[in-house]
Image (spheres, rainbow, N blue to C red):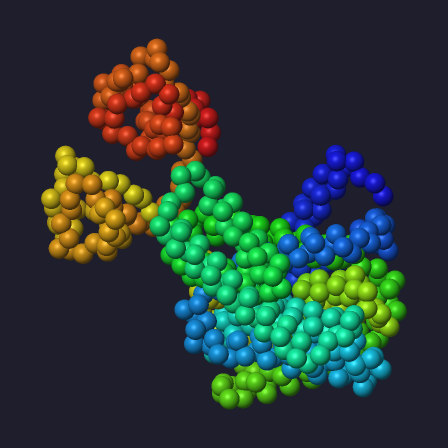
Length: 543
């Protein structure tokens, strides 16, 4: 099917709208939104209702890899290291050794129980060895599942960091099947992947953190474009040298997400939205790429693998590796059941289709069926299993395990400068009469930042930041804009000298790139953009 630009844009808009609506409806139906996106893609695919032919695996791999880069970057960005630090050891062990044990046991199951070749069985195990960050994050956030015994941070770090290890195993096994590879070469490839991934991740993350703390962006929106380029660089730079780009971009995201960046309030909602779109596009595209008719042919072996993974292999791996760390039996059972397979498994399975290595089994559709089973079965039942195991912390807040938790707090900040003529100049903080429900939280004096204390004396040029709760029951405001023209009567006049207009108040003055909160002494100049609040909706535009 050939698309014109207009029809392609129409198709994309319909899909994104459908994904948005499905995300709202899926929660009410009790099914994971990501499963709904996959089913929507299958509905539009070659064997679906709309029968759109799509078999471009190369294009799908490129789009899917790009989507995974942003998902993994934001997975690292959203991981709260202070919450994860107490369980970092067990989390990293599960994401590294746990991934390898899962791949090995799954491969042996495919070899002995399903009759696959040993390398092909191990490759199938590698594809399915990682748990899915997008699915785990989505369920924990949407259901607000606060789990006991630090189970949530364990799952978040494990699922966010184990895709790079699954990718490494997939690359090694494909190399072995394509050209053959010696044990020495395998060790060298693994060391190169890990070493370059870690070096680039910490190097890029650390350098960008230093730069963003030292330099402010002059133009609004530039910081988001900058960090997008950082995410792409974090993946591409080590990958082009044979390193693990997924590991690099995850580490870079974690470093930036756990830094006190001035642009944080802008970056969090931006990447939250971008990641949501990427997840929807990724799962829809994988659904579009699949053929339900082909899935039926591999249904029995795929379900056998899914059941073995869910009830034998994953629990065995978790119980074995978590034994030295203690914890209750309920925690280990819950973490075992929470090992959802997801998009990364299917994306890596695309590599088997593009590989010149001879495959006796359709690993792409086998992985697809396993992922569908995992998201539908485990994803749907996870809240009920957590409740049955008494692992839900009713008084906890799972958002505290994410670095964007602060953005859920209903507070606002305002910033202002102390001039020489300001009444507060020369006063101590303890002497100030602040508005009720507000507090001074930060003071910048030249290049020095400090937390204001009662005995802190304010000086000319000090920049203060005040914090207060968000306004509840905000009344409707009727706002209008006005540009001060050169021949305007208001030009070169102070606000105090302007004729009084009942029911109107100038609340903001934009002068070039600067914004001013005006008072009576503010002198208006040609080109100033005034924002005016009115008591009457007919006096200005409704906002």
